[in-house]
Image (cartoon, rainbow, N blue to C red; front, side, top):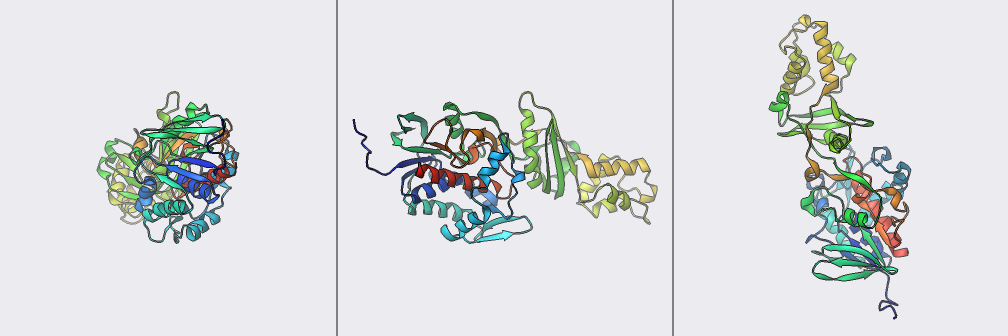
Length: 414
C-alpha cells in the first residue's frame, strides 16, 4: 500500500507551545515543513508570561556556562549552549521577532523594551504562525509511539496525527498551574531514555526559626553557601525573609542543593550566610572600641535595624553593649554569626514555586547538535525536560531558545 502522504511536505509535530517548543516551531516552519504545534492550554507560553515579574527576562546580558547545573556530561551541555551564541539570539529577538531589548546592568539582565512579557509570548507565537506553523490549542497528547519510519501522536478527543518527526518540548514539573505536568518526561521515560531524578530548582526555602520569625519582609543583599555531601552552591544577591522562610535571587540560586536532600540516601544540607559584604577582618576593625558607639549602631550601619538586633541576640551579645566593653570572645562570636551564620532550613517550596525542573532526560540521550534522540530517529527533545538548568537571570530562556532552535532546524532537515 502506498503512503497516503507521499509527495506532501515533511510533517513535524511539536508538543508544547512554551519557550522551547515555540522556538522549534518557528525554525521548523521556516524550513518549509508542515509544522503542527500542539499546546494543552488555551493560549500557551504561560511561563513566559509570569517570568521576570511579568516583564520576561529574555536573556542574560553576559553568558556564563559555568553557572549551569547538570548531572550529565558538562562538555555535552556546553556544546548545546554554544550552538546559538548570545549575540545572535539577541539579534533574532530584535530583528526577526521585532522586539527591542533593553539591558539592566545592575542585574545583568535583558528585557523587552516594553517590559511586557506578553509581547515576547505573542511575538514568538505570531512569528511561528507567519512562518506557516499550525497552532492547535487545548490539544492534550496522550501518547507518542513509533509507527514504521514515522511517529503516531495520540490525542485526547481528537484523531491521532502521523508525523515524520516529533519534538517533545512540554517542559518539566515546575509551576504546574501553567500547564506543566511532566507529560514530556513520562513520554521520554516510556520510550526507554535514561533519566536523572528530577527535583525542584530555583525555588524558595522554608524555615521556622523562632529567631527570624519577626523579620518577614526584611530584605538585603547577602552571600549564601549551600552544602550537602559533595554538592555545593554559592550565590550573592538579593535575600528576602518571608512568612514561611526565605526567598530572593540568592536563595533561588542555591536552593537546588537543599531541594535534593529530601531524596532517599541523600546527605543532609546546610546553608551559611554572609550577611554583608564585610569579611572577618573588616568586621573585626569595625567592632574595635570607638568612643561611645554600641554594637547595634555598628551593625545597623550595614544592615536593616531589625536584622541587626536579631543577629546580635543570636550571637548572645547585647546590642546595646558599648564597643569598649565588648569582650574578645563576644566579638569573635558576633563576627562568626555575621560572616558564616547558619540559615535554618526545614525544606523548600517545591515545584509549585520552582522556576525550573532539575534533572530529566540525560543529555547523553540526545545528539547535542540536533537534539535528536539517540534511541529513536525522528524524535527530538529540548528545553526544560533535558537535564540542565541555569541560575535566574535569563539563563534558562537562553537554554530553551538554543535547544528549541536546534531541534526545529534538525527536524526539518532530517
